[in-house]
Image: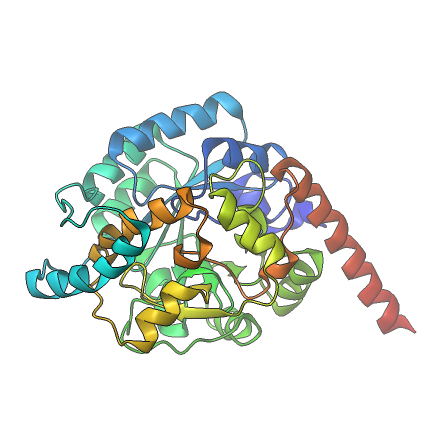
Length: 360
C-alpha cells in the first residue's frame, strides 16, 4: 500500500512518515537515521547561520543517500522594539538571579538572514524544503522549484492552506492544535482557531488539490493510521523523536518527556514571543500568573536563551522550554532507526485491526 502513496512517491521514500524539523533539537544524525529507515528526516535550520546549514547538509549527505528535508521559518519577524525588549529583559532578570547567571542585554545582530539561508538551500539543493510561520517571497519559491526541490508549507486553517497552495507548494503540512512547538499560524496570528487534527484534515482535503500531511500529537502507529483514515497522505511526528539518542535535546528535557507524565501541556509565548505548546512548568506559570511583559518573536527567544541554556546545564527542567505535543507520555528513548520500523509495524497492525473489526 505504501508504494502508491502520493507523498512517498513524490519524496522518493519508502514510508509516508516524516520526522518533524524541530529547530534546535534535530541533528544530521537524527535526520539521516530516519531517512535511512525509510522515512523522511528533516533538519530544523531556522536558527542556524548559512554556514551551519551548509555544513549540516553536507554531513547529512555523508550519512545517507536517501532524501531529506531542510526547514526554515518564513521571514515574518516583528521590528525591533527597544521598549518592549527592555521590559521583557528586566522581568527575566529574576530567573537569572535564581540561576546565578549575569544580567545583560544580548546582541540581536546575530539573527540569521532568511535570504542568505535560502541561498545555501539553492546552492546545496536538498531534495525537499519545508517552511512554517508564513510564506516566503514567491520569487524565492519559484527559484527553488526551478531546481526541482519539492516544497512543503505549514498551515493551521483552511485560509492558510489555500494561500500555501496558491503559492505553489507541492504539499501542505496541516498542523493540529495537539502539536508541540510553535503554532504555525500566519494568516491571522492574533487569533488561533486551535483546530485539532480530526477537524483540520477533513477540512483541508475537501478544498485542496495538493496532498495533505498531518502533524500534531501523532506518536505511534494508531495515530498514523487515524490520520491516513481522515485523508492525510503522510504523518509528521516530532515529539516521538525528541528523547531518542540522535536528538540534541538536553538530558533533563528527555527525562521530562519520559517520566513526567502528569504534567500538562499549554500554548504559551513565554519562551519565544510566539505561541508554542510546551510542558507547563515553573517558568511558564510565573510568566502567566504575573502577566509578564514578552518581547515579540524572535527577540524573546534570544532574551531567554541564556536562561534556557543555564537551566539545562543545572538540570532545571522547571525553567527550560520543554516543547511537547499533547501525547508526549507515549514518547520512548529508542534510537530513531528503530522508531521508524516500529511505527510501520504499529500502523499496519492498526489498519488490520480496524479492517477486522469492520468485517465482523
